[in-house]
Image 1 (cartoon, helix red, strand yellow):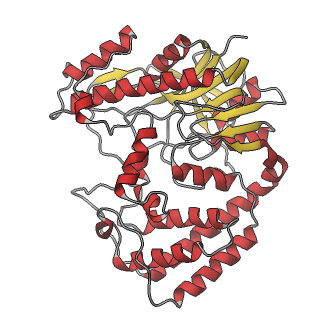
Image 2 (tube, one colour):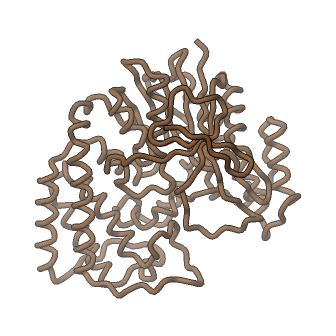
Image 3 (cartoon, one colour):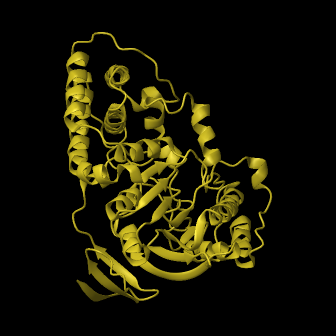
Amino acid sequence: MIVAVQNQQTAYLHIEGDIPADLDEGAFISVTRKPALKIYSLGFQPAKSIPEIPRWFLHKYARKPFTVLDPFAGSGTTIIESLKYGASVYWLDYHPLSRLICRVKTSPVSPSEVLQSASAIIKTSENQKYAPNTVHFANKDFWFQQQVQEGLEIIREHIEETKITIQPVLRLAFASTVRKTSNMNDGMILAAKRSRFEEIPKRSRADVFRYFLQYVEKAVEAIAEWNPFLEESINNVEELPLADARTLSGEWLCDAIVTSPPYINAIDYVWAAKFELHWLGMVESDRDRLDLYSKEIGTERIPREECKALGVTGNQFLDSLIEDIYTGNNYKASKGQNELRARVVYKYFQDMKNHFASIFSHLRPGGHYCFSIGDISKICGVDIPVASILTELACEVGFCKQYHFNLLLKNRQLNLPRNVNWAGTIKHDTIVVLEKPA
């Protein structure tokens, strides 16, 4: 059902359920979503994309047989929708936790076997007196109480002793347990010391074991619901052995790319998953974790010397925005921040242009690239029309813009402190469809 709604100066089409294929070019829509499969919500991923977008694209543009690529797979939304549609799908992601989430969602496993193994782990753990001490990272004692550390170490040890085929599900439940039993307040995205914290209760090993079993049960319920779909399409999904979307190699082709690239200056995904990365052994040290930033598009971890240079992209409009940030014309931030943010913007768009150029040769002629991204980001008081600039950069490497519409963001709230003069709130996602000329 579609209803026109007037919201301030923007007229929205209010849509209940799936987005219609015949949506007008440039429309602004608001979507009331229907209950989704539980598999979508499995795994921690800030600002998850919604399944209605890849579902809309597939029903509008896909013809069977059809092969989709998601180069920023995240929590696997495009993967799930592609498999449900009957398409084949390639995927990759630089982030180790995202890769674990997507592997769980694309690997068949027996729910009863997972539950039996988890119950056995808890039974053994409850009788274990001594806990190992194997996980080390900065400020671990601040964020994890001693009893919690012991409980996590014990479960971690026993997961590694289980059958290899069920370990990914147990590890994903363990990742949720790590976040839940840390000293972060519920809803916090980044582990940062703040002036105001809700009081954290004292926790025991038993609390850790209880949460772990709860998350296993949640995962098992989602997998049991998803398995009938997966069993019919398991041969249609492949993880590419790549971890950098800027340089895509290999002898493979796809009919479409459907994805949600990283938001610029919005979420530090490495920092957000810091605890999970260390407790799961995905990084071996703080230095190892920081090295992940080299693969992240839009990273803020840039050497200070590099930030002194004013980046020039060759796109006149974009370069004027970068210069406004650099000089502080709209907002003068604390020492060095204007230069850093200008460099972040420069590198983000350069990286995305490299990505578009890299993907172009892997897309069949007449194929499409559909991306969903925040429409406007405010950085140091400068409005950056991200979606339109990305579209322009993609056209510079050979794509043609075919279509776009705008989606009102309702529930993507991030528990991050923001200065409104520094960085505003993203109100819409813009969905853009590009075409590679035939």
